[in-house]
Length: 239
Length: 239
DNA sequence: TTAGTCTTAATTGTCGACAATTTAGCATTG
DNA sequence: CAATGCTAAATTGTCGACAATTAAGACTAA
Image 1 (tube, helix red, strand yellow):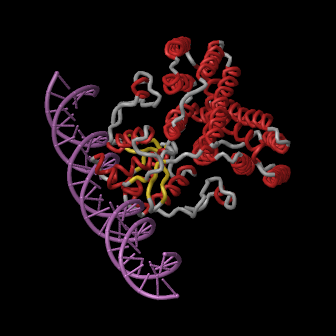
Image 2 (image 1 turned 120 degrees about the vertical axis):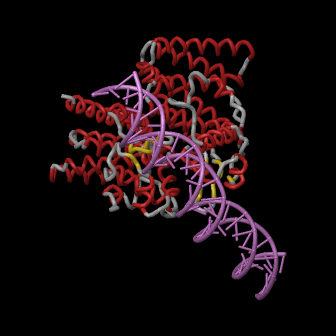
């Protein structure tokens, strides 16, 4: 119902590419509402979607709702079995790690392209963002904020900086919502903040130097570190 | 209507991951039929989709057809404007090149993972496939066959060899159908066959040596070469 | 008590009809 | 003659209802 901070944050520079006006059709509105409810945990993971109930809940017909459900399924936020129904995706640890491999590949490429495609203006803005994060960190040891939103914003900007609409669509419309879903599912609190910040700095330097090769290497290393950090957490969690 | 050669080819080792039984619901069947009709050009690119007409044509209701249309849209095979309708995706050259960047990243990662994840058995099969292609080439200078199907089969096997379901889904369910669509749209005939074959051999060698780093480098180089080849063709075509 | 089967209720898939929006054609006017 | 506004037809979006399938529960029998 209420806007997530993420959406609010990136109002002028939205991660979701809504090139034209806002959603018009009902099914589209329900799609966005449902997606938000899912990634924020208002609809618990693994729970079954009751079409009649939700339709009544959102005040729309079942047909419109089903169209929204179809799109959610295409985003891998729902899994649907024929004649049985749809459930909110429950991501296993293996699946999360799979996503990290995809992110490593795609965001690495995005960084490489961004080093060529980003305007000087955009790079300056990116540096400003990083400086802002730096202050935030030393001011309040603000691990929560940085990891949850600042990190996302940083990555979004580089992805969009690639100017490759496929990359942008895949990462911002699909994978990142799934990441948020999992992050809620497991309550991943962000450790590793200071180190991540330094990595961000190095990536921006490479982009500013227009060194695509280096930017890709650093971004891949950055995401790989995140993955290994999660692997470590998962091992601890098992004991 | 009739089975495409691609589907026929990979009957026992389907690129599309249909883990369970075949499609049951009508919307699913129409989805597959429409997708095939689109990528094979039976429905011309850029043409508008008339819901009443197609519904009557396929003998289903408009509701079921709309669900299929929704999925096609999620695959980027259709573009739909609210209250206006859906058109078959017309891919610009820029968009095709964008896809190649995504492929370079994803298939590079797939090759890296395949070098670790593929079983010895699978690698042997892959080598057999390559030998088969080699014979085919020297026998009939069979450029057409190799480029259209053998190449796809080769790439499919490595992608599936990564054992990463996200990679498999993205590449085999989305990107490759879009590639086929474009390939029809522009009638890309396959040059560059002998060189591509050698590149394939080197990739398989790297995988057989379990050298993921090398496999990724070679696969990326392979796809980059394809992209540059297409860029060259596009330039020629403009004159 | 438990396993199995049948019945019933609920949910999903599908369909046809109505409402809202767009598009095309025509008339009108500067 | 061109441009603008209006009207009508067609198409899309939305809805409620029916059919088919599944899940649950009760009942019987071993």
